[in-house]
Image 1 (tube, one colour):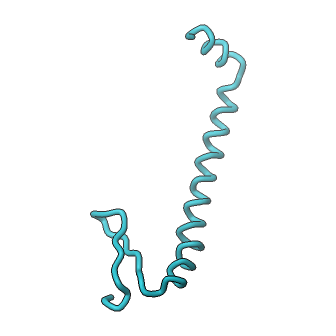
Image 2 (tube, rainbow, N blue to C red; image 1 turned 180 degrees about the vertical axis):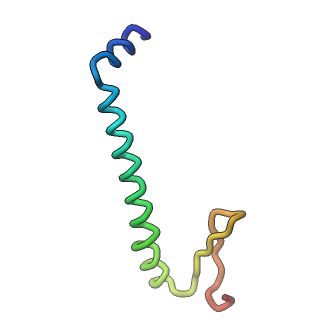
Image 3 (cartoon, rainbow, N blue to C red; image 1 turned 120 degrees about the vertical axis):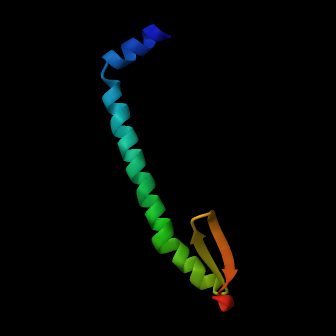
Length: 68
């Protein structure tokens, strides 16, 4: 298995993997931004009565909009 790994590195595929990882991370950031900035506000408008709140001690907390 180590021999195969050395051959894999020698063929130059490491650069391909590095580029793939960079593209994957960038794509993940784009999707996260799309969901947080475009999709979730629309969902919030459609639901209307619920409000998602971020707090430092939890991932998300849902409270009624009437109380805020």
